[in-house]
Image (cartoon, rainbow, N blue to C red; front, top):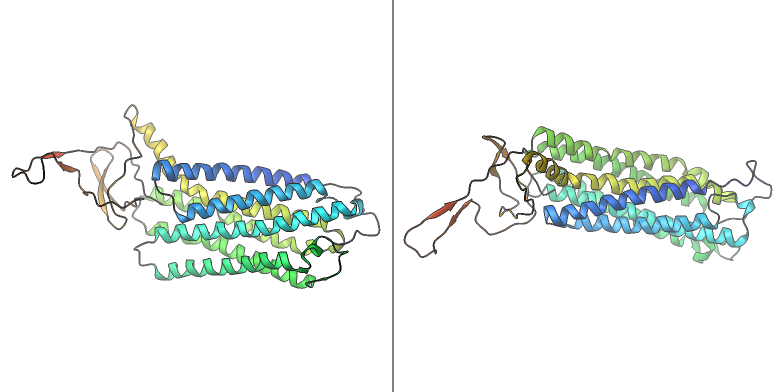
Length: 362
């Protein structure tokens, strides 16, 4: 954090830090609720928690830490002109802002990796080689770029404390290098956001699902365009951030859009995972007084296709994507006599559904 300007700013002792606090608290709160519901769906309904879920939880935890450090930075003076801050306030605000930036970048990183893993799981057994390769490349590029930028954010000065206390003897990277790294990270982030919004549409259109489900899921994943827009907007505020003389004030808009980007990414990436819950609620209403049991484990393997009776007497071919494989029988007939008995008497269970809801374990 650089020294204060020598003359009072035109706007006076303006304080816009509350904007960052409001955005950070509101968006991380919504993200926390959505991720909590996501885990409820995974544990109670789908009964399978994958790596993509844990990575999204990690992204949320990092986002919470980023939000906490942003709020602390604001309490010390972030959002106010450096001219009106004392030395301790400027040092404290700069320190927490630097810490927040590192956690914010890694939150974005793990969120995008989580989305890629979700799509790769859906594509298991499918002949989408180019699409899978694209996702793997995205994971590698996003990981490398965000890791490098995070490290450079924390070691841009020697010693590290010079980042927020310029009076300490030492050296720092040229400001143009810092801006280039910020532009690189923002560009990669925006590209990945748009890419991961378009690819699911191609994936869902190829699945054996009814058109309504395809439209709903594609629309939900398409909301990811919002994250790309926030990434582009964040890039716009990199240049004002480089005004070293008053960074406690000029950096606030960059921090606001960074908070929006990481938290909106968590929200829009987790909303499609709530689809089984929406189907369950819709199915419960249509079943009326009949008790609906979503927790039954269906003994199908993830690479099998089955005919399911849906609606009143109609048969639709759906690809059922369950969460757990099992070696149990794949039919509804169960022997009621021991296996060695010479006579084979079978009990047949007829399953009738009055809902058009068919689950898949995505």
